[in-house]
Length: 149
Length: 149
Length: 149
Length: 149
Image 1 (cartoon, chains in turn blue, green, brown, cyan):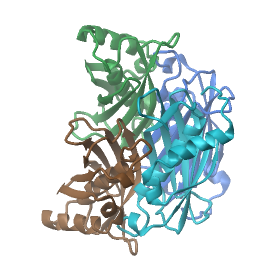
Image 2 (cartoon, one colour; image 1 turned 120 degrees about the vertical axis):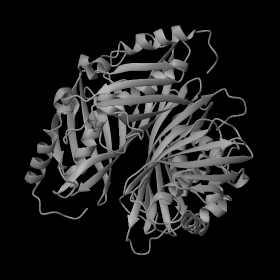
Image 3 (cartoon, rainbow over the protein chains, first blue to last red; image 1 turned 45 degrees about the vertical axis):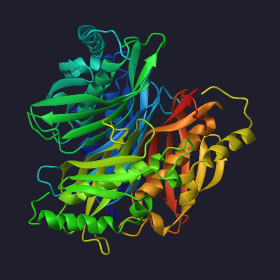
Image 4 (cartoon, rainbow over the protein chains, first blue to last red; image 1 turned 90 degrees about the vertical axis):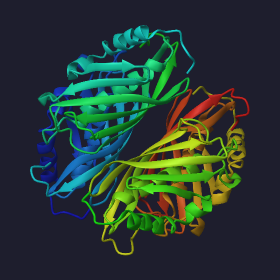
């Protein structure tokens, strides 16, 4: 990933503009808590509408936010003209998503021009050990009509 | 996985009872289209509330249904006293989830007593090539208080 | 992946030329049994030098061949000027690699210009159920100095 | 994972005894550099016998050592009567394995009684950024005849 002249404020505005277009994130009630180049922090509350059969938040809801946190961590280091897509991710659910509020992190492990590898972690109610972890591969897409952010 | 005396009708009732307790599935509007031992078919419609920044269904929504289809494929071959949890899955998003209706499959590759490996595929609008595939590892949990289905 | 004028014989020669440069495959004693566009079949014998602590073939040896079978399945559908690299794979080891001879398959699920998603399966001694499965993401690299095959 | 009365020296002896039975590790020339409870460090040298078509160490060789480092990180926190098996792992190869000597780490993220989730990283020639990362799920096996270590 080549260096860019983009300021931190411009990067933040770019990330927020894209995030705000993700209807699923507002439907889930996800908030972006912090963004640095290569690091994103998000927050998700327990919501009865998104539970699985045992009453915990559905793995899919947690994975969606982990995926999004990894996606924007990757996007934050991409050139401004790139769009970001998830190529593949692996998520481990190590304990049920039991809690009232979940903190979800995404960070870049290594970035190439087209592929950016990220890691994410999910924590419940201020816990120190993650209950879910993700390893994700994001793709930078350039010059595809109609695809931005 | 040892043989069970459970009839196909009992298995189907067991799967449906668990699925019906997954609030996230009803929130997403997911329908169970077919269930055989080791095979599950689900259906998901495009829904503006669950889109990503380019207007396609969010990878997380698709992955949630793939995960659930794999989970119930695994659950369908588990002994009636087991509960099913997702240990880990890998999903590849090979094309955007562009379409009006998505067909999602889950099938058991191989089942052990505690771990069941499954594969899932997602198709758009009757297409023949999947736009997303999953490889999932499900856990059978036995005798855990308060955990059934 | 755009169509190519390459004949099946040219494709086969291209795959074999690259495979023959993989010292690890000859060290492991791997043979290419069959190659079609998008499908590769390989064969590996039990070898005491590559066992794990319980005397079975090491997961890493099996995964190496699965990775290679997936890689050449992807390479077989790539344009002749592309080089193939593994971006990421997930392997499930569902049973020990117990047997005298292992059959390993790789097949393309869906191919884009830069990313090709493949699946692989490993069978022992003519068994019908795989003991290991892989989901892999291969990258086509174009015009990188010194990188061919 | 319940606490054990095992001393650090007993744990180390247990890990080494199992590692020494892995023929593949001695064939690859892998050395165990450091072992703490939940953390393992290994070292691998470049070896022409295990290269891929471009002359770099084969992804399969690197992944084998990452898998083994994760496996012994998991094993180091397991009760002494457990045997360790790899259930599944995901590896990302972010750059070719270019170098003379590779440092490979494995660490436990979270351990349950039967499943232990680990992460591994591979570095070339003292580099600070990993060229490969792994997320692995290990299984503890209890009381299986003939399976120890």
